[in-house]
Image 1 (cartoon, rainbow, N blue to C red):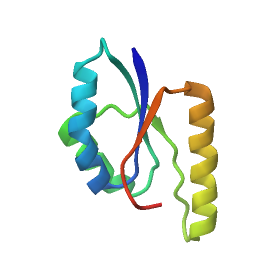
Image 2 (image 1 turned 45 degrees about the horizontal axis):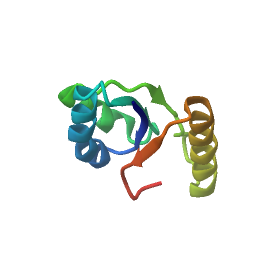
Image 3 (image 1 turned 90 degrees about the horizontal axis):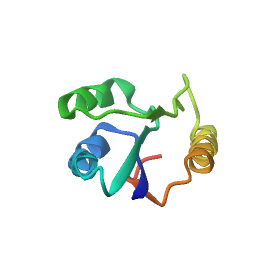
Amino acid sequence: MRQVLVVFGTRPEAIKVAPVIREMRRRADQFEIHVVTTGQHRELIEQVIHLFGIRVDRDLAVMQPNQALAPLLARLLERIGAALVELRPDMVLAQGDTS
Protein backbone atom coordinates (compact mmCIF):
# COMPACT_ATOMS: atom_id res chain seq x y z
CA MET A 1 0.00 0.00 0.00
CA ARG A 2 1.33 3.42 -0.95
CA GLN A 3 1.12 6.25 1.56
CA VAL A 4 0.30 9.54 -0.19
CA LEU A 5 0.42 13.05 1.23
CA VAL A 6 -1.96 15.37 -0.67
CA VAL A 7 -1.37 19.10 -0.13
CA PHE A 8 -3.43 22.10 -1.25
CA GLY A 9 -3.99 25.65 -0.05
CA THR A 10 -6.66 27.46 -2.05
CA ARG A 11 -10.22 26.80 -3.20
CA PRO A 12 -9.30 26.24 -6.88
CA GLU A 13 -6.59 23.80 -5.81
CA ALA A 14 -9.05 21.92 -3.58
CA ILE A 15 -11.58 21.69 -6.42
CA LYS A 16 -8.94 20.29 -8.79
CA VAL A 17 -7.63 17.68 -6.38
CA ALA A 18 -10.99 16.60 -4.86
CA PRO A 19 -11.70 13.91 -7.50
CA VAL A 20 -8.20 12.50 -7.06
CA ILE A 21 -8.64 12.31 -3.28
CA ARG A 22 -12.04 10.66 -3.71
CA GLU A 23 -10.66 8.04 -6.11
CA MET A 24 -7.60 7.29 -4.00
CA ARG A 25 -9.78 6.88 -0.90
CA ARG A 26 -12.05 4.58 -2.90
CA ARG A 27 -8.95 2.45 -3.52
CA ALA A 28 -8.10 2.12 0.16
CA ASP A 29 -6.48 -1.23 -0.53
CA GLN A 30 -3.84 0.57 -2.65
CA PHE A 31 -3.50 4.01 -1.04
CA GLU A 32 -3.39 5.49 2.42
CA ILE A 33 -4.15 9.19 1.96
CA HIS A 34 -3.18 12.04 4.29
CA VAL A 35 -4.85 15.29 3.24
CA VAL A 36 -3.04 18.45 4.30
CA THR A 37 -4.28 22.00 3.81
CA THR A 38 -2.00 24.96 4.28
CA GLY A 39 -4.72 27.05 5.89
CA GLN A 40 -4.61 29.69 3.17
CA HIS A 41 -8.02 31.04 2.13
CA ARG A 42 -9.62 29.08 4.99
CA GLU A 43 -13.19 30.36 4.55
CA LEU A 44 -13.22 29.53 0.84
CA ILE A 45 -11.60 26.12 1.26
CA GLU A 46 -14.10 25.06 3.92
CA GLN A 47 -16.89 25.41 1.34
CA VAL A 48 -15.13 23.01 -1.03
CA ILE A 49 -14.16 20.58 1.73
CA HIS A 50 -17.81 20.29 2.77
CA LEU A 51 -19.12 20.16 -0.80
CA PHE A 52 -16.83 17.28 -1.80
CA GLY A 53 -16.76 15.58 1.60
CA ILE A 54 -12.99 15.86 1.93
CA ARG A 55 -11.59 14.83 5.30
CA VAL A 56 -8.59 17.02 6.12
CA ASP A 57 -6.06 15.21 8.28
CA ARG A 58 -3.82 18.18 9.00
CA ASP A 59 -4.18 21.95 8.76
CA LEU A 60 -0.84 23.74 8.69
CA ALA A 61 -2.56 27.01 9.75
CA VAL A 62 0.11 29.24 8.23
CA MET A 63 -1.91 32.44 7.80
CA GLN A 64 -1.27 35.45 10.04
CA PRO A 65 -2.63 39.00 9.86
CA ASN A 66 -0.66 41.41 7.65
CA GLN A 67 1.96 38.81 6.79
CA ALA A 68 4.72 39.21 4.26
CA LEU A 69 5.49 36.54 1.68
CA ALA A 70 8.89 35.45 3.04
CA PRO A 71 7.65 34.58 6.57
CA LEU A 72 4.64 32.79 5.04
CA LEU A 73 6.91 30.66 2.86
CA ALA A 74 9.17 29.93 5.82
CA ARG A 75 6.19 28.68 7.89
CA LEU A 76 4.98 26.58 4.95
CA LEU A 77 8.36 24.91 4.50
CA GLU A 78 8.78 24.29 8.21
CA ARG A 79 5.31 22.79 8.70
CA ILE A 80 5.30 20.74 5.52
CA GLY A 81 8.77 19.50 6.45
CA ALA A 82 7.51 18.39 9.85
CA ALA A 83 4.59 16.55 8.21
CA LEU A 84 6.97 14.79 5.82
CA VAL A 85 9.23 13.68 8.66
CA GLU A 86 6.31 12.46 10.76
CA LEU A 87 4.26 10.73 8.06
CA ARG A 88 7.09 9.55 5.77
CA PRO A 89 4.86 9.26 2.67
CA ASP A 90 5.83 7.30 -0.41
CA MET A 91 4.50 10.10 -2.62
CA VAL A 92 3.45 13.73 -2.33
CA LEU A 93 0.80 15.31 -4.52
CA ALA A 94 0.94 19.08 -4.23
CA GLN A 95 -1.70 20.94 -6.23
CA GLY A 96 -1.21 24.59 -6.98
CA ASP A 97 1.00 27.42 -7.97
CA THR A 98 0.29 29.74 -5.04
CA SER A 99 2.48 30.05 -1.97
